[in-house]
Length: 81
Figure 1 (cartoon, one colour):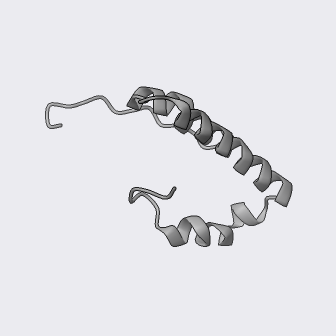
Figure 2: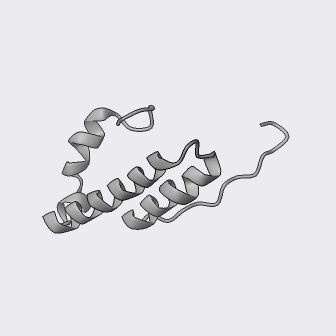
């Protein structure tokens, strides 16, 4: 399931567990978050060919919300892009 290059495998599997934010969570909170994210992933997998906008609205934004992360507005294209 780990694809792309945003985070290293080490960070996702081990490194994140060393952060103060992760250590402050109970096992129940971690399990609930993992189950919620897995449900979102399964729903995305059922979509035939989700567009980038659908992927953002159906998976990325809900995951960021569940993690309590603030979303930054997307930057509009400039003449240099």
